[in-house]
Length: 339
Image (cartoon, rainbow, N blue to C red):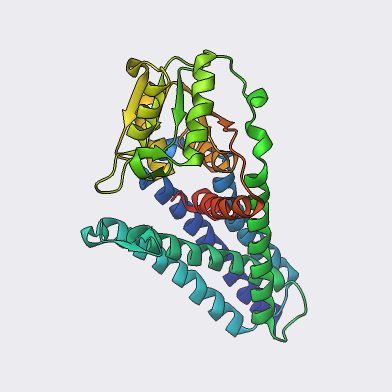
């Protein structure tokens, strides 16, 4: 086979690299569009955005380097790569379709996740997995390995995703970042208590109660003059915000110092609420250490001036593993897809 033919085949992977970059740019655009943010609010230093464009740029750079290696690439390899990149774009189209079609709004839950969010997250996850696979697939062509090549790349891709999950897990586990000694201000415009479970007789759950008591302690120490309470309710129940308000008022907090938000049901929605009404204010969020890792990252995505302080709630090792594993998955999904 002539050198020109080798160059032709290697160059075709540069096209795939550019398509991967376009995929990343569209994904980033959708992250901001679906959250009612202008693309001009994009932050290059945000961890989730770095992950998005790093994968694409690494794929493109690998394809460019591959061209100059003058490696002979089988036609089947190019076909596989083209099929994978095509599937990625089909998934993006499906995500936009799900977002725009009314039938997917408020149609129930799947595995305790809203159906719309479940399928959006699923399609995004498949798409990003394909992008990681493509990077490994193209960079792997540098080497003289052909036997079980696709299977080898699949194993390496799974290993890479595992490392990404471990990195996120360690990030979530770093609860010492949210002690009172780590905050940078002595006075904030508002304190904020994100909602949590409410038990029978409108009693906050132990986790929620610990958040409220810590926020009350900081309120009495004049870290802030007003407290924002967020969190909606299940049908027939008092809202999480109202349960917290009742608890605080019983302990002597003036109702005039409390701001209620009773409609949100997720952490992202609560941050969107803060973005809408308190975007230029300094806010101290009081929650659990494992939760603050995600909530402060969501706030950073929305360009909010937020810091976090952990409550004094202690839990068993079993509970700690459960909550932090759950937060790890949730944070990684938000980093990559802002959902």
